[in-house]
Image: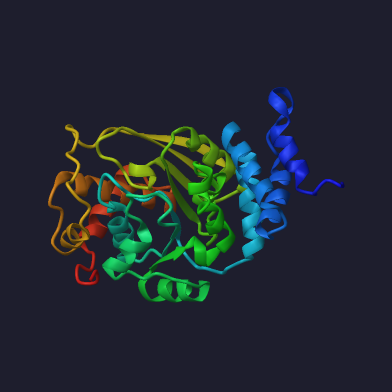
Length: 327
């Protein structure tokens, strides 16, 4: 029986302890094109994803996956200042990054957010919160463009943007692990924005994303270990963020913002987010999380600015937000 064309990529990844290797960027792109075009068998897809997971994706592999997605999508002509991926969900603290994004949108920046929801039990996801807060969700590229034109902000589910990726993310209950698709989605920048931000949970992925961003020649990228895996500043911890600006890699080290570890809220009631937006910060954790997240996002969009200047702008933007346009 003649080998399936995709079998070669599984063989490269799984050819024993001494024979296996990572895919080249071109091999990763070619193999992922086959996946996006439904040209692989389910058993091949499962083997491929888990072999990648075991040996950990390389920057070249992630860059190849992203290139395949870009070519599959084509130029969407989405005019945004910042591409903000949101795939982790929150379970310990409120989703302060949403208020940060909304305040930046009120300040005139166009923020394109994309993500997935519901793949991990017990987490609160961006899609649900956008709907509860009355923020614009797009189920098509045209709708996303309209939302950006009218509100400077939109969230688009990956299920509407690139359904095949959503299908693979939904395999988690069957595979028992997250797949490399989570890694590529976070750095994908489907809107081709100048600025890109990505939150990671495992620090090892900082370097993988940074290396992939450099290979992809993205203009300005900020990667940080965020609270719960989202791009959100955790005031209780020191932060080392990783940036790529015009091909130059760098690291940004920030001190812990709070002196004492914050108490986890009893629940993640959306009303607390609404009250904070309409009135103001009720506790130091929310203030530090929102402003710290805005600071990093501004730095991604305007990398020439100092961190101090970015924080001053964050405070200014928060103070001038429209307190009436969240539910």
